[in-house]
Structure formats: C-alpha cells, structure tokens
Image: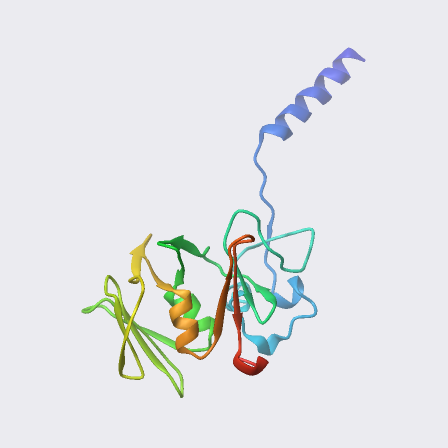
Length: 186
C-alpha cells in the first residue's frame, strides 16, 4: 500500500510541474457557432487559416483582464497580435488592422510606408512620422507609427476614424469601442 501511494504521489508531482498547453485546429465557426462567416473579422483571417487557437471553457469572446480589448459595434473582436498601449494610444499591427476593415494592404520598403485601400479610401502611414495621407490629403497623427518585433504598429483611432467609424475608450475596463456611423455594417 505504501508503494502504491508513493507511485501515485510521484505521478501527481510530475504532472503538476510539467507545463501543458492545449491548442486545436479550429475554424471561426467551431469557436463561435453563432458568428456569421461573412463578417470577415480578424479572427477568421487567422483561425480559418489553420493557426492554433487556444481552447477556452467559454466559447464566446469576452474581455480579457490585464490587456487592451477591442469591441466593434458591441461585439468583442479577437486579434492575433495583442494591441499595444503607448503614449496614451492603442496600436495594432497595420496588416491585421487594415484587413480587419477589409482594406487591401501593401508595404513600401523604401519609405517604410504602410498603404491600405479599398474602393473609397486610401491610407498611407509612414513609420516614425506624425503625418499620413488619407485619399491624398495630408493628416496629422497624435503619435507616429512604429516598428517593434518586426511588425509595424499603427494608431487604431486614426485608422478607424479615417474610415468613418466612431471610437471611444473605456479606460476603467481597458476596452476600445468602435462603432459604425448609423449602426450599419462595415
């Protein structure tokens, strides 16, 4: 009996010190059954490509304590890269943010400029500069875009407002609220 208890104790100790992470290959529909595939939000751009997604007990998105969260028209959105709060502004990687808003994305290596466009809008943001161009018109940024960890981060508020969205900040809960004008679809 002592031997059995000893073996069980050793096994329990071993399992308690070995880090375990559970990942699965899920699609957006698997994680969020009520989500509409046509929505095309950022999660579907990554999760549907077969990137690992953590399995969570609650299958619906909610605020994540201790980090910046993004809500679009009242629904929490998942971004593959975490938003960064710096100089009082929230930044996201330009490609992921622009694709979230259904813009095509390109990069100009010579000028370190992120370019995004759709049928109505073209946005050009150069890293390290407090100026940007929206439909050819010069605009001033509160803070410049920057590169960190090999990714170019752009200010979320500037991009969303340039596309006609309203942006609010819930500092108490660390949530950026983005709303369509008139409550319509993106």
